[in-house]
Length: 455
Image (cartoon, rainbow, N blue to C red; front, top):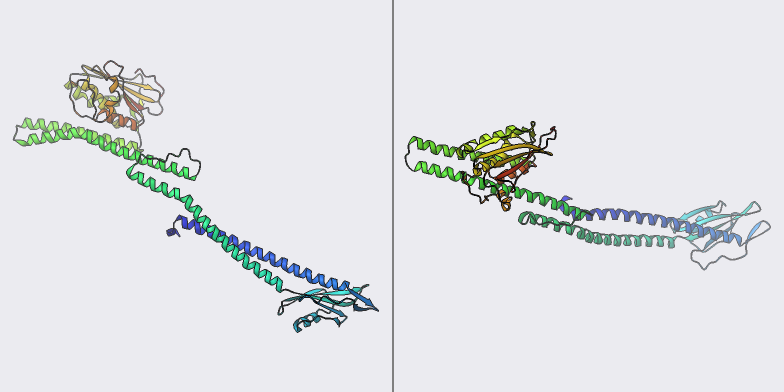
């Protein structure tokens, strides 16, 4: 039945249920009516026999009829037997006459004459304990049979009309009930293709339709979030890889344009190698963020070791700019609730930014704040303006402060915040601090005691 569709299947189910119920009702009604009509026929024929007995008289131990039976009714059959002798008989068919004589033995009983559709009843006449004769009364069953057939036909017609009415009503109600579902489904399919930000927004679910709307809204939310992640991943990948790739291509084209000395090739290969490493770090960071956002497993790492690893990665830039790069040791050992590799990829771009803008010194402080480990990356550069606190975390946006250091693309602050938030952390800029100050919050590892942060 699945090719019929939900509406047709429900209509057939309703039709089957109603048909079964109507068959039961019609059958029950006709059975009850048959019993009632049969009882009425028995009562009528017995009443006639008793009435005839009351009209009899006895003389000398013999029965006599004092009042003629009512012959005006076509089915008024009454016989009076004195012993085995017939003293009163109606005008009737031979088959009924023979059946009446069979009942003249005096026993009270009923007898149906099937060929003539007649019911007979024999009632003994007993006077002072002595049986003097028998009265046999009859009644035609034709009116009762006609009533029974008419009732059966009427109930079948009525049942058919009720079934038809129920089918029409069920079809209309099912159509009206499923029409919003069909419309919502089609709208959700269209929105998922062209407008993922559109929602039904019917509020808290209070019935099946609003529950379906809430489910579809949730599905569209997840679809929109997935598309946003995909677009953000593509945008970040394009933004972060554009400059390193351009440098690699430009340097390789320049090196191949003419023959050069070995040391010039070495310099070109060194620059290409550094940009290739930068490309690899960027791709690894983006893939790691996608993996964690998809529910990948998180490890743990030593907070001090992570900071020192990020500092080593930035040591070349610090030496180039003659900066003092210092990583302080926390009051007691702290662990973060993510892998060391991912944590370094989060901290490194923030540290690179500090080395790029700092004048003489860059420091990294480590502390505990509630359920987070906080890295405070500070430099003595121009700092971050209040109106740039959030803008600098957007892809492709840089602060307006002068950049005395190298302007390489790096992983970028936008990607650092993206990675941190993918593991329930964050990266924020402190515009009120003198010089540049960034706070990197990462989830603390399990089993650590609370340590107040000095940052």
